[in-house]
Amino acid sequence: MKEYGVLYAKIVLPKGHKLEWLKYCALTNILPKDLQNEIKELSTKINIKYKNFIIVPMDNRIIPGCITTPESIEEVSKSIYNGMMEFMKKLTGEDNCIRLVYGIGEMPESIENINSTHEIGNFPIMLKVGGFFDSSDKSGIFRV
Image 1 (cartoon, helix red, strand yellow):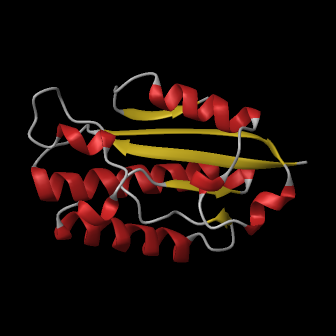
Image 2: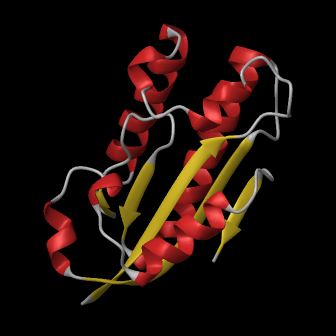
């Protein structure tokens, strides 16, 4: 077992907002092209900038995840959060609409051979981050 940093992020818009459905969307390929492009651009930028610290890259999903070294998770989390806030402000005019949850915990080194955090099993840190992530639609960055 080894320590890793884990994060998940999602868009959380107010009830009744025309794009409120984004927080439930698991199919990135059905999103408007401009949003798909922004997500891809951000994930590429993050994965290049933090390549020495990222274990499982940020994926091009509307609900992205990422696994990093423990010492870099906070910095990577802030960059992803700020990047998502920036493109949402640009595309929708909305701010304070991103929820990002991160934490540090132990997982087997075999997770280093996967392509997405969405493929990782039920390890305590994944349950802790995922449980808090799903517990609210309050925007912000949260460490658990």
